[in-house]
Amino acid sequence: MNEKIEELKKNYELLENTEDVDFRVLIEDEIAKLEDEITQHAPEDKNNAIVEIRAGTGGEESELFAAQLARMYVKFAERKGYKVTVNDNKQTSIGGTKEFIATITGDGAYGLYKYEAGVHRVQRVPETEKKGRIHTSAATVAILPEIEEKEVTINPLDLKIDVYRSGGHGGQSVNTTDSAVRITHLPSGLVVTCQDERSQLKNKAKAMTHLRSRLWQANEDRKRQEQSDKRLTMVMSGDRSDKIRTYNFPQDRITDHRIPKSWNNMQKILDGDLEPVINELKSVERKSEIEKLLTDSDSA
Image 1 (cartoon, rainbow, N blue to C red):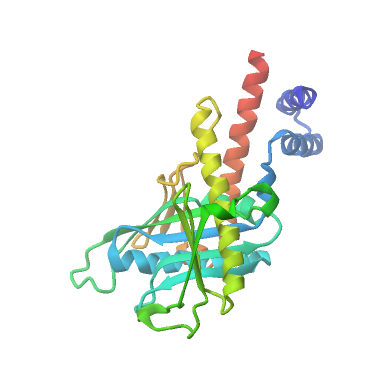
Image 2 (cartoon, rainbow, N blue to C red):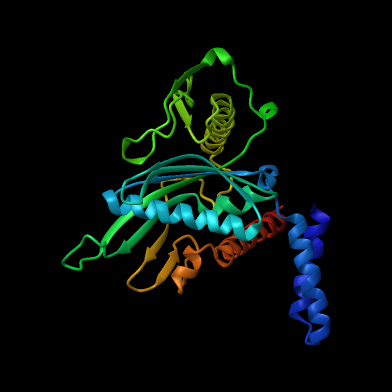
């Protein structure tokens, strides 16, 4: 690794002192290759992603916004060729959602979606607002990697499993069998549910997968807190309570507060064109990591 860092430094210096356009292109290509080799990719980045969206402050407006975020992530998955499996979707009678949980299946899904974790804030005039006042509401997004059974051991005796009848929005029943599953992990108090499938066994399997991911994330959060000297980049702070983005409808502007950077043509992004936003976040994180590695190398 140290050899690659030294090679990267030489290429930076060479680029700074080179005016020949063709040669600069070659140097830049080599720099990009070296940067990719020395930046650390988390093993779980290649995993499937579990997306959790919950309405926050703002009542019905927050629930409508949560539904809009869910649609954005589904559309983004479709653009990437990923499969979307909805595990739970607590919809409201006006088209909002209180909670949306889905698994995004595809190579590298978690490595892309992880940048969406945090509090998303929306500013707009609700349709029910007669005086035209702008309201601010929010929804929370959590992104978990799907974790294989061998990576997290769960003692069956630590589980309380309940089954109940699936319910749709407005209290209507989805089916007439007790197929929905609720699993409580007694030591941690974590609760997961799944009611999307008509089969109780399938719902239980999905719920167990979700629970493994939640337990894995809880362990990662503990390690992050214990290792106070662990580097936290400006992009991935690990704090799900962070306000990461504002969607300002009157100004047709989305602002990511971690960079910070803004984009217009908001509807295009809400229709699933998230790649420019995520690529910018990845670029900033990569640059931050490279700078840290170079600084550590100089001080060694």
